[in-house]
Length: 104
Image (cartoon, rainbow, N blue to C red; front, top):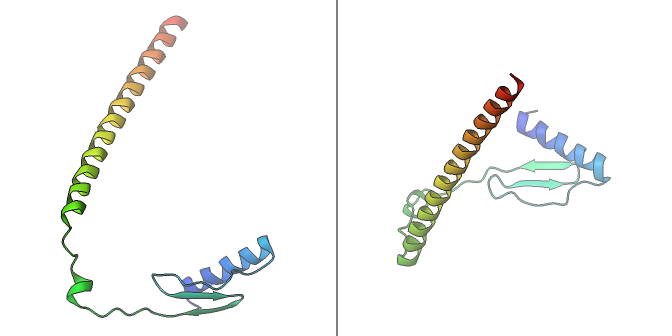
């Protein structure tokens, strides 16, 4: 038995143990894995290689504008988080130094 298949079996058994029933059938978009009680079947999904599957389509004007805004917002948030972390470290170091001076 292969490792992914064994992991699948263990996951289903674990679910049956905890909840008292097997998962209902569903399909995973990546590998088209089918669960049905204790019966498992793996299918390999094949995708034809075309220009649509190999290359990303260009962004529309609105998508490009939104991507620029998202990137700017993420940059601002990262900078603010870095500043807050630096302040926290500075205050922690000052507190530890003060506590050490009080003990001495």
